[in-house]
Image 1 (cartoon, one colour):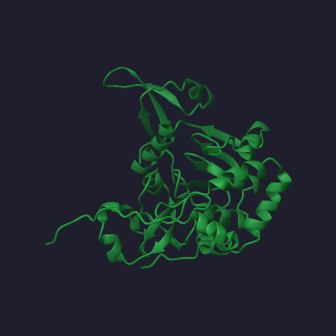
Image 2 (cartoon, rainbow, N blue to C red):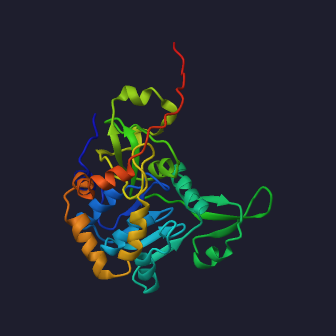
Image 3 (cartoon, rainbow, N blue to C red):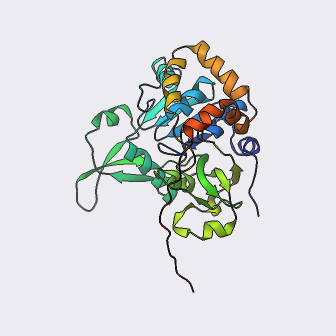
Length: 300
């Protein structure tokens, strides 16, 4: 049965006030369109988890969606600080938990496997242990040495963006692979957004690339250009100019409100947002084809 929904329908149905939301994607395939729809629907009291919050969580915190952030590394990548999230934490307005990248992924792996926690080798990041009581030390029952443990993370909803999916949620993604698979298997509900919706035969033609199986997906949404200002490998480039612009915008609450009014509340969906960016931006972010070599899976 098809799981196709509009993004607005999927967010309304599967994201509830107070939920723990994990927006996946590392460097690229960051689901900005879903984050903007959450803002547009004025969801509140969310716990936002991500390996790198990126600009999307800065924007969601600015819009009043969050009461807590769970993260590993926080910053405007290549530019500086996430001014809004950092300021809210420093003022005591936003709860927070910080982990290493490996710690965050280990939490998702434990959640995906149905385990209560995941052990890790001790690292040099002892300050994290002092700042976060959820990072603990136990004795390895086999060797007797100390290991670090982190608790399982089971989001209420994970949002995953992919290059292509079939209507049942079986999905291909390529380029930098982040924590998408772990997040999808750990979550109670999964919203999948895709640059393209393709038939099942296309997905079956390359089974090794099917990192998200439809059996864990609740909603499939066709949302081209969902990642801007992030990128989708093979579809459009990263908008580095916007990351620089956001550093200036986020210095002032007034300019942030103006931006949200124009670019989130002021457009009805991602298609209108992309159209509003204009042909000059479209051309600047266009990528040339760079195809991989074919893979022969044989015949039988």
